[in-house]
Length: 162
Image (cartoon, rainbow, N blue to C red):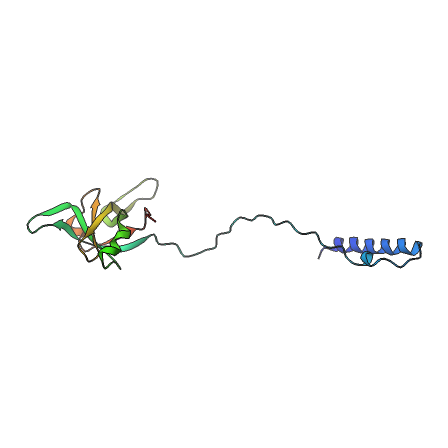
């Protein structure tokens, strides 16, 4: 505790006792006791973020192939199987979500202000379901190359429709 605060209350107590001796009355019980503490004002504190696990904003999927008929394939639309999605009803949540196909290129390239890297991203968007087994159709800004079939894609959980 603060020693100066204790001295203050000691002096207060002695002064009350001296004042009471001069009038030959016993000191009042309030003078001997400490005065009630003032209620402390709550100081608003900023929320201190604690180190936590990073939040994953995507789920995995697999590029299956282009949309196709018996003889013709439509290269502007890719089919994606999303992990954990088994029915047409389940695909409703993912409609409009963004898809990222991440791959490595031969040469490094600077993107923005970051360091040079070989990683590249092709962005697309889920348009609708395809069949009843949880496969969806996605259109990419540039058509996905055929060598990407079987590769993993990230199905982002944004934009949110909830």
